[in-house]
Length: 135
Figure 1 (spheres, one colour):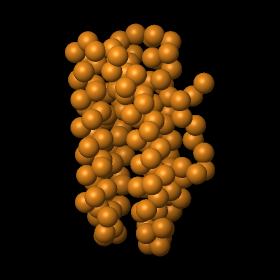
Figure 2 (cartoon, helix red, strand yellow):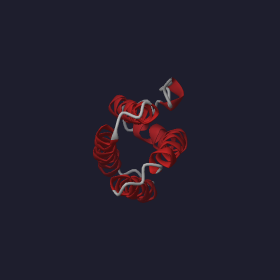
Figure 3 (cartoon, one colour):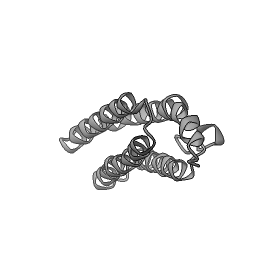
Figure 4 (cartoon, one colour):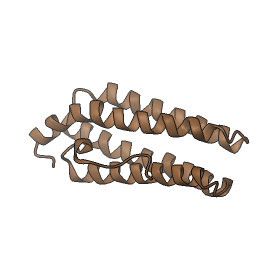
């Protein structure tokens, strides 16, 4: 069973960003499945790298929209992105250092952070960007 299920409540009404959010949800679900199935350190380490890399790509996309359309919440939103990247990188480092229990903590953090970030923080920019014609 998936840790997170994509639904329309999570949509920010911007196709490119919704697709990226869906991809991040998929990576988190893959990581969760790998953890439950004890698929091994290499698989999980690879998924953590993918999550770090893809999240960075996604945050760049959002922040590019913010700069292009002069979104007034750019700095606050970017600070949340920076905190997330730092936290996930720390968890990846802990895992690579042999702390396998960090994956359980990571699952809780990722699920809570992503759903809260999309439902609260991302939904703040959605009407602003939609008002600029971004869908």
